[in-house]
Image (cartoon, rainbow, N blue to C red; front, side, top):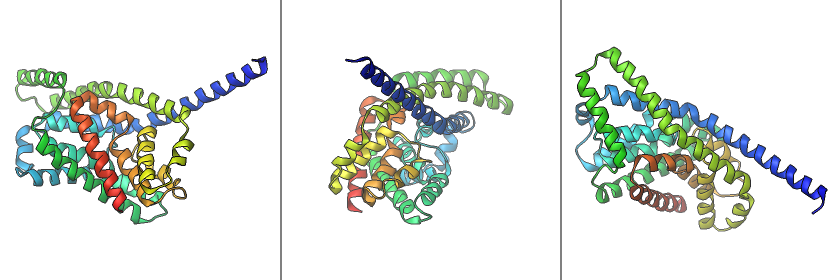
Length: 309
């Protein structure tokens, strides 16, 4: 190999690493505000929301609790990363697992910020925004119903439950903390949660940036010749790219000339429910078997719903 060829290869490698660095930083900057928001909401739930308060508002009926959890997503402007710690906290507070998962799946999609960004990204048209919300609710409800029948326990990992037990004794020792103590506790919990979740954001961002840099998306796009293949390819692309739900509509709209509505819709819904970043966070909080079972259900329902559109 000549010196010139070695120089060219070195230059290409440096350029690729710089591109990877740019993508990684953009992922972190994009997700960080919503991680912070998510951990603060999680901490507020821990310090100010009691099991008794949740018991009063949460319907006892299996299907009504799932519907309630699905609707809660409209109230929390969190992306798919920030919503995982909130969901974990809700499960710790004895919210039914199925209702908490319904909330986790719809929250990053049906909240006002995401609906409006989707509306703007697709030329001030409500069609894609409404279809996205519809498919998200369809997938979340069916996934939650299936979970309610197959998983009776909370499915938190053992060390998460142990940590909850430890914090519970700490709170008992204080015996009903006053408002100032609750504020201090909220900040402490938010800081702990931020560093706990943040490392998975960084690790997931690195993996996603590397895959986007060294994995040719043009190869994937060339495979999506049929409707079925296009949907699967776009779901895979959404997982790899790991774009926050507040920004993914602008990326999805760039595929308008290549794929039909069904494939773009699958990209918008699946990516907001499952990507590299939040997969690592879910694996941290929930049992592995449960996480992969849930993802399998999401794949089936997103694909089916998108294919029927």
